[in-house]
Amino acid sequence: MNRNFFSLPVGTDNEKILSSFSEQIRIIPLIDADGCIVDFATNKKVRQIPVAAPQLDGNELAYVTECIRTSWISSQGKYVREFENIFKEKMKVAGALAVSNGTVALHLALAALGIREGDEVIVPNFTFAASVNAILYAGAVPVLADIDPKTWNLSAETIRPLLTERTKAIMPVHLYGHPCD
Image (cartoon, rainbow, N blue to C red; front, side):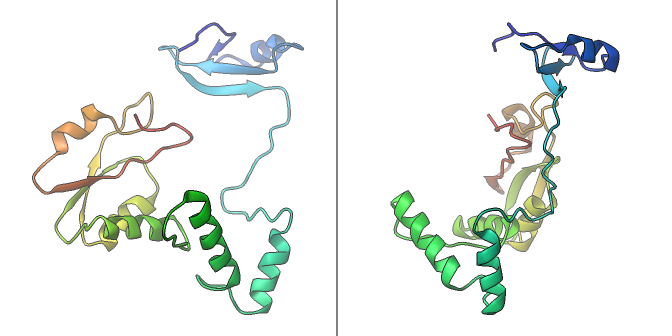
């Protein structure tokens, strides 16, 4: 990792942080005792994107309005078919299936893998409920694995002791922009 950058320890008082900004330094990584970036500070306004609020920029509002007006507000309809066809062409695959949310997508993936009742699926203990719910919907048994405290993700070290003959899948969750290794 390139550690040749200006940073401050996490927990640095605001006065010190504010006095460190300049024309060249507009974002300051905040690092823990191990030198890992765990937060950042900026003197600019950060645009917050609410987790549950819809973002209807561009043509989205017109498309959503048309779906409501024509009663096609489910998992079918013109826009869903168009999306599936465009996705299929871009990915150069024989088929594509759009689903309503991540839980359904995970459940569908488990079904495609042949995960059945009694099978074990390893999943991180720090995740959104959809990960575990999809496993339960498939009739399988979620096996919760500890996460690596530096990456917030599964690691070989946390998974290895949980592997059994009943383990049929490992469901990694790439959390907060940190990909699993």
